[in-house]
Length: 369
Ligand SMILES: NC(=O)c1ccc[n+]([C@@H]2O[C@H](COP(=O)([O-])OP(=O)(O)OC[C@H]3O[C@@H](n4cnc5c(N)ncnc54)[C@H](O)[C@@H]3O)[C@@H](O)[C@H]2O)c1
Image 1 (tube, rainbow, N blue to C red):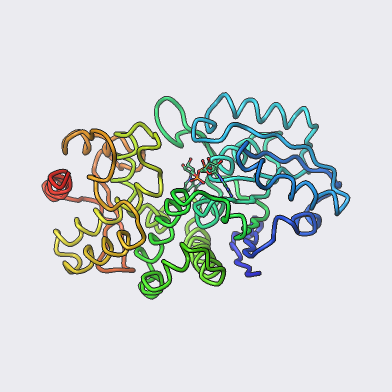
Image 2: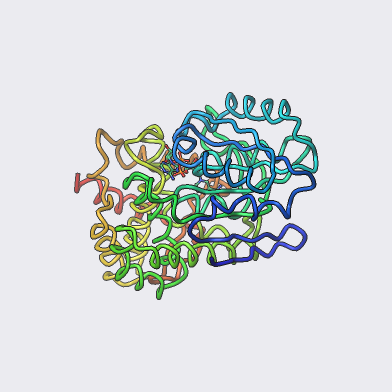
């Protein structure tokens, strides 16, 4: 088992990464408990595959547990299920000093984390992330929240977990498309700040995809180390944490254009967005022309979407996509902010990106459709 510390003073916590952690969750969680009782929230798909293991692990340590399984899918991350989840936790008599467990992907982690943040003005929670995306990204860093009719993640809170247990064995049951979507975020870490990690992914990505345990442990651990370091230096995104949004300005426009449907999963949008961000960087003379080609070649070799042409159905034109970027909550004072790169592993935040260059990149990308 690997351990990565997220250093946030009194709110510091550990991310433990390894195989079989859910089967050992009772022993891992027990030291946090003031009384031997927890409430578990999961989704129906994850419940079918992994809840019995967790419940047995808790029982083995004499920890009483009740569980709620919400419907799987992004639609669960909204007001209705937040109300249902919060009221259920109150019915379970979760008290101020108790611990809530979130077992699932980013949807469950974000929703349950937010419910924990507002329940009795804040109770502790433990993340048991079960998707690659949740293990390398959403379970670490304390961003919690829900979507509303106005957009994604617009209501939420910073609420750090007390512990994260990333059981790499549970990724065996994850559909390949979801695995590759999470891989989009893994690649992002290499691209934004660790060229040697990107080199390693180019060589080991296929083994990782095929289920190699050593590669999986290394990829999740390195990703978590990078996220933990950035979060520790900039918890509330005043500066460096914005680098984690590499590829996300393009991604959010594409997600809005495809209605947050399964036409495009979040990590797929991130991967395409990273490729476009490197094309934009190259067009602006910031990085070499080889860099975007290398990014695209690796994503393609992994069997991932690289191009707008691979998104099924119609997409709006360049101006409409730029307008969708403009609604992004990360826009500062109406200017388009992008995370760009001076090379692989060298991302930075660019404040005033010329509109013509963005238009040209999107025109070219749409012309390839
Ligand atoms: N808080 C953050 O910092 C942060 C960062 C990135 C993304 N997010 C959020 O994360 C969400 C996406 O997360 P996600 O991709 O994990 O989606 P998800 O939680 O919807 O999981 C994807 C699908 O996989 C299923 N699943 C989960 N684990 C499984 C397993 N082990 N075996 C089989 N099936 C399994 C789920 O039931 C679901 O159908 C989005 O809402 C996004 O906004 C948050």
